[in-house]
Length: 491
Ligand code: AHR
Image (cartoon, rainbow, N blue to C red; front, side, top):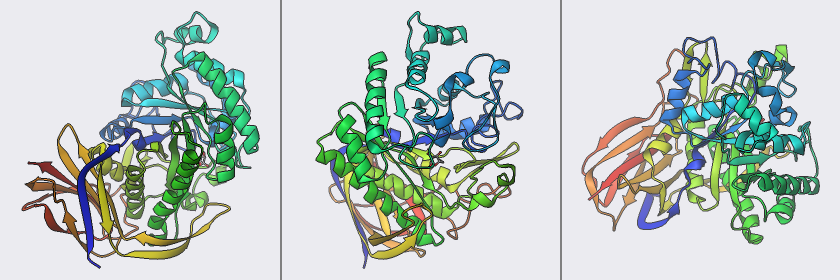
């Protein structure tokens, strides 16, 4: 079948830029020897790796989640503030190794200011208490002459930080989690934490733990849905075969749509989805260096196929823009990281470049678009425990979204060609007057497993091509395994 794409000029609403967010956890080399390294000549006087800061600024990180993940369940925020020499060295109880607490709340906020992003803090429901969550909120956000607000000022930070986004716990539905509990127990804790925290600072937004389990999600939403602002969902996939990995984008879409349906069923329109952990995770790194020392590193080597997975997730989030209003790639550096470091060197993976493609070349207004193409059925396995195989029917070989940048007056047509061969697409833009010359931005490579490494850091990145003779009906040849964004200026 001829693959065809039709774009209508009708605006369908806004895409929230917070879908392009990130996550940093005290896991392996994400923070220490990752974004924070006081000894590197590449770091500034605060220990922030400048090359990483610059790379993150280029993809305009809108929101950054911290300090976990699972790590948060045994985190006590007061260990991470005050003079460095007084901060306790503790075991990293969750991921192994030593937690020096050199990077704590004040450093995190400074980091967010440096990269111009909103901070998102997750509170512990494991070994910490409601008191600690409240005092953390006071430390961050209040300007009162009270204990923790004064403590922040004494630590050299007179102005409140105004942290808006607060997650209540992390994955407490899972038996791997300290603080594991039933849906009903969590729903009641969530109610208490949210009521109390919003009582202290009514401007905050609360993110609840969703489980990608309709029973859990319904219980939580029914009990506390009227109080919360977001419900989260976490998805990690990765299969041995190329199509299995990229098809899992559509498994994620199914799960997001199920959660959306529950929210709609309960008429909780104010509750949005925070896709606050998502990535490819093959679990191959479990065998890697670090495990012998009892430290979990999770340094997955990401390749072209993973960049296409990320591009596919962005297209899904564009389609679901009314409900999916925040997302955080898990994670930013080294551990499941889209950026890798080795000593003072840095490599940007294809996942990073998928962010570049979508953040910098698509708009924030969604347009109506339809893709007509061949599809496939697949029965595949991903590592995810408990449901490590899935069957999907009708997975598209080509997918995309159309967006508009109101400021630049640019129409962006994003098209992913998952085929391992070139694909011709008929693009119908009737009703939209475009200039003859357009720019094609393409992310591709020669094989699904091709990657950037320290010897060849630029093998895979976004490349630009000029397209001449564009018109309202045109034929485009998409490279095999490519994510493309065509930027059309309007007449
Ligand atoms: O991102 C790695 C881990 O995956 C996080 O700590 C946890 O929330 C999830 O299970």
